Amino acid sequence: MIYKAWFQCALGCDERHDLNEIVYECSKCGGLLEVEHDIDALRTKSPVYWRQLFDQRYMRTGWPYGSSVWGKKEMVCPNVENENVVSMFEGGGNLFWADRLGREIGVEDLWVKQCGNSHTGSFKDLGMTVLVSMVKQMISEGKCIPAVACASTGDTSAALAAYGAAAGIRTIVFLPRDKVSAAQLVQPMANGALVVSLETDFDGCMRIVREICLRENIYLANSMNSLRVEGQKTISLELAQQFDWEMPDWIVIPGGNLGNVSALGKGLQEMEEIGLINQLPRIAVAQSANANPLYRSYLQNFDRFEPIPAQRTLASAIQIGDPVSAQKAIRVLKTFNGVVEQATEDELANASAMADRTGLFCCPHTGVAFAALFKLLDRGVIQRKDRVVVISTAHGLKFTEFKIAYHEDRLRDLGVEPRHANRPLELPPKYDLVRDRVFQALLM
Ligand SMILES: *Cc1c(COP(=O)(O)O)cnc(C)c1O
Ligand SMILES: [Zn+2]
Image (cartoon, rainbow, N blue to C red):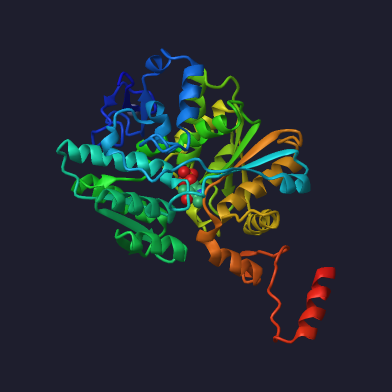
């Protein structure tokens, strides 16, 4: 294969590493590494060639290209041999035309990219397939990797455990106790990961996993490992593909550790460099007001970035106060004339429920993105005629506790007043009574 990629310092130091080296940070400045592609090699083929190739492979069965991540292998990770790819047909998330919700909020052209319709129920699969495939490649080359580990707010560990199990590679996941949903906890348990529940928050888990990986030769699967970013950037490639290579005006994306928005930006920029797209969208990052270090930095024009202790939020996957990819995300936002908006618990819960009423089934993080969209529309930052895509990051079925508590009005302690609550009618099985109450309810 003539296409090449390697690790390079994201802050511009002159340091390169092969993708099969176990290295996460630049030895000169301590900053994150980034996967750099030989763009000139990719440009030896025309944009038309790439578009046709990607379209031909999309969602078909030719191994491993039917996966929408590996269908773009040349732009994602050309270094892995096909026989070492660990794939579960990830990607290809439905682009949902949210016409009814759009009409309710006055946007003509609203779309939801359903990244949670995926093997483990979140977009984390997109990055994990690349990372675990590279681990399998390294093991096949004789490297000693006893296990792969991550700290997680729930979805990363589910993805790591599933891909590790599929490949027969040991996995260790560090979770903050009582801060992940039941579905998120049971996923790595079911897939046979070593599950370590720590009496701390995500940031505390992150400190432990970094140390154990640095000292014990265990491979780190958090997004400071930039291989995951390569898989996640296919969200932007798919969006281009699904819109026939035209970009929307805005992409709204929830952000916690800020790896996903970094990936989105990287994918868009590389597509532009290769000529696959000709215009760039603007990007809005949505944060929970209880875990909003990027929002605070945005208010100060990104002059400074200060980690904060994250407070409890229903959007538990983005309850992160010290995001690993903050600097990458800020660079993306500057490039894409981006904005950051925040959502309170009341706003995110009601936005999520309102979207559900139009046929979606949102996770709370997607609720944060919707709430941010509503506010940006009100302020006229996003215009009513704009084409807007909301990135839905996980499947709502992973967060049923959140939804039940909302509909049962049990979130008052977080300030949530459920304006779209819908409780079951509980009745004895008596026809006349049932009929009366049903019609009474229909007329309300
Ligand atoms: C991981 C995750 C996010 C946040 O992505 P980052 O890359 O950490 O910013 C948002 N929503 C869900 C459901 C997630 O699992
Ligand atoms: Zn550096």
